[in-house]
Length: 416
Ligand SMILES: *[C@@H]1O[C@H](CO)[C@@H](O)[C@H](O)[C@H]1NC(C)=O
Ligand SMILES: *[C@@H]1O[C@H](CO)[C@@H](O)[C@H](O)[C@H]1NC(C)=O
Ligand SMILES: *[C@@H]1O[C@H](CO)[C@@H](O)[C@H](O)[C@H]1NC(C)=O
Ligand SMILES: *[C@@H]1O[C@H](CO)[C@@H](O)[C@H](O)[C@H]1NC(C)=O
Ligand SMILES: *[C@@H]1O[C@H](CO)[C@@H](O)[C@H](O)[C@H]1NC(C)=O
Ligand SMILES: *[C@@H]1O[C@H](CO)[C@@H](O)[C@H](O)[C@H]1NC(C)=O
Image (cartoon, rainbow, N blue to C red; front, top):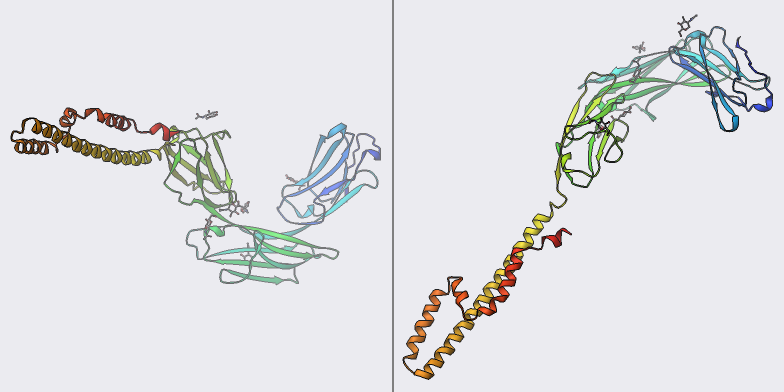
């Protein structure tokens, strides 16, 4: 162990200090090439205070310090040790000191993990994932603890075949996972989990292997109908690993996320994108496209959806037409009934007149009356003139009212 930093810029009193903490708080296992980061945190009223570290003498690490003021002149001070790519010499005990009895430590164990990402391809017969783990000193021994997909343990069955082999008294374990007839949804991180038994402690190691998949966008509807004043929602469902960034473009609308009219985000995991357009306007109709960009793959698919905007009152017109037709039927019925009534009254009036004349003249009454009636019957099928010339025209004021109704259907009432 080497004393790397033992610089205390200002004298301090232990009353200024609270307990020193480390992150990670327990011993850890890392594979060569992985990132090591240990953060020592404490509180002080003295801004420039620096902790001292005891680290392995072969360690090749960098150190950073952060100090941020909390309320009333109290600082939170962090001292961070980093190795971007762990080397064998970096393994060992790291101790952070702040005063004589205020220290905390963590021991870093190194293993060697041999692993390789696999890329999903359409119509693959099988996917072979593997992680081979070996210890780097003579102390630890490895125990394979199974494969997981996310947090789900995988069991051997029709889809998965697990083959493991332990050699050199647990100094090397090879673990293979074979996925039969994989689909794009199988993409993600698979972890091969190990326990490593050291003389005084047992630690676990998760070996992460990715099944990567280029993005595809599930076919959305070609078009959607949106109503003026309502919200239009477009979704773009992307399957990929790692995460794909979805962006939206429109030929008619500036899709800047303004939180008032336009908003977008992710749903159901974080690859699927949803675009909301509030208070839809007539001018929003047009083509909208989502683009899937993934930092790993060159293939950048996109899909387009057309928005048709319809009036808020579109439903009113069929209803109006219906009401209109019902009205016409009612009006025609009334008009025809009226006309028949008038005709009947006219006929009675004429007969009455004839009888009066007959009484006065008593001259060939029957022939005249029959001729008149016949004439009336011939004329009756034809419209208009006859009614206007009718002696009972005053009763047709009812017709005028109906005519007005006819010319102004009650649209406004319905729109309200
Ligand atoms: C320490 O690490 C840096 C990179 O982090 C490297 O450039 C340098 O050669 C290393 N020094 C030794 C002594 O290994
Ligand atoms: C792990 O070991 C097995 C058996 O020796 C080998 O087939 C496989 O390729 C190795 N995996 C990696 C990632 O090197
Ligand atoms: C694959 O994932 C998509 C999106 O989550 C889902 O809709 C679909 O049902 C999944 N397909 C299968 C076969 O699991
Ligand atoms: C494996 O894939 C993961 C997820 O895409 C990525 O973060 C990691 O860098 C890849 N590792 C290698 C060795 O390519
Ligand atoms: C979204 O991405 C995550 C990892 O970034 C992955 O685990 C998940 O399966 C993806 N979901 C879909 C539906 O592609
Ligand atoms: C879209 O709107 C934002 C702010 O609302 C503005 O900054 C940006 O320049 C606009 N882009 C285009 C292409 O009009």
